[in-house]
Every structure is written in structure tokens, then in C-alpha cells.
Image (cartoon, rainbow, N blue to C red):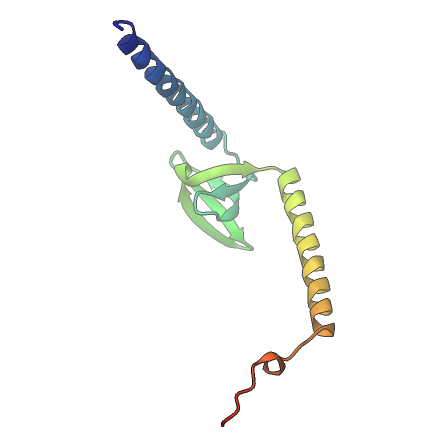
Length: 125
């Protein structure tokens, strides 16, 4: 019975310790990625904005978000660096989605049913 309390404490502290270590590793990885940014990198911000790095400072990053439109962001707001494979895969998925949407629209126009035809008819007694 005297051994139960120390074992219980150890059983609770080990997962907490491992979680803190994993979180520190993830933070270090993100910090390294933000410090290794270079001009020309395609990035995604924490708010989901896609852009290309055009200029770097110690604390800020200038992103081109559209042709000749440049915005300034803190380095900490960069969530990930996109590589060419990610961009290509995203473009393919968009094309497939567009094709499926077009097919669905065509099929829907062939089977059009007016909602008024299915509505219950009210009669006055």
C-alpha cells in the first residue's frame, strides 16, 4: 500500500514529461524553419494566407500575395514553407474538383425537378 502513491505519481508524471519534450521539439522545428526562410520560398501564414517571400528582415518577412502586392508579416506568423510538390498536388486537386463539379452540374440539369411540383396541394373544404 505504501508503494501505490509513488507508482501513481510516476505513472502521471511520465506522460506529462514526454508531452513537454515533444512540444519543445516541435517549437524548435518551427523556429528553425522561420529562421531558415529565404527569398523565393512559398509560405503559408498562421492565418492561412499563401505568399512568396520577397524580402527578409530580422523580425519581419515581406510576402507577395498577388502580382505586385506585397505585405509585411512577423516571422512568427509563418506556419509552413510549401515546396513545389505541395503546390502541384494542390493544383491537381483543384482541377479534379472543378471537373467533378462540372459533371454534377450537368447531371443535375438533366434531372431537374421543380420544387413546386413536389409541394403538397392545399384544398379548401
